[in-house]
Image 1 (cartoon, rainbow, N blue to C red):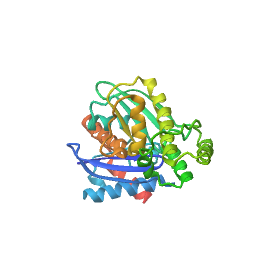
Image 2 (cartoon, rainbow, N blue to C red):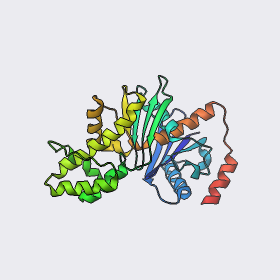
Image 3 (tube, one colour):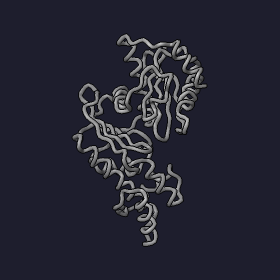
Image 4 (cartoon, one colour):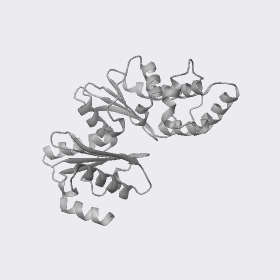
Length: 276
């Protein structure tokens, strides 16, 4: 029987189903809304439909992310730190440093030789260094978020952005435009500022190869290039950067079963019925 992982992040919710050979059967990515419990049920239902399975056909369900406690039908709740490590260990076993840039926080995770968490750092007190920071600035510039990466690569230089607070950064960007700076130079400067903040945080772990970037930030080629310039070597990007945590959660479910942990399927059905 397959295993499912659900990752409720601050901006996106992900679900993934893997089989006993840890092959991906189905995955779903959708925006995170206010009703986490119904959203979790929605994404797992969509994943089940893609995999042609029923809820009762799942051997184990693990929830992760900051909204993991809002998945009442999960058999276990695990931190996103552990799940990111488990997912990356399966995808890219040579990785020693994970840089996860999400919508509302950024994380650095150091893995030992066995791919387990040795240490981690997080920035969740400010939007700077996150996808939300870029989203706000993109709105200020009148650009779509998914265009920022390619636009920044056209810049011959970058404008230094000194403010890391989103509110003050908006004002600084407006001032730079008034001074005649080009949009590509400003966007490149924003990427440099975020990369610098994130790398300064991660350096406390001890930087070493290989490094992987996950989360929405990994889908921004300009930000990835800025991170590479800071660390001095190319970084790795997983096939689907948003699914790392959900994949790790599903694989953790497989680990639980191998250790003899048994889910209560009857209780799971009751919980699902209650929240539908």
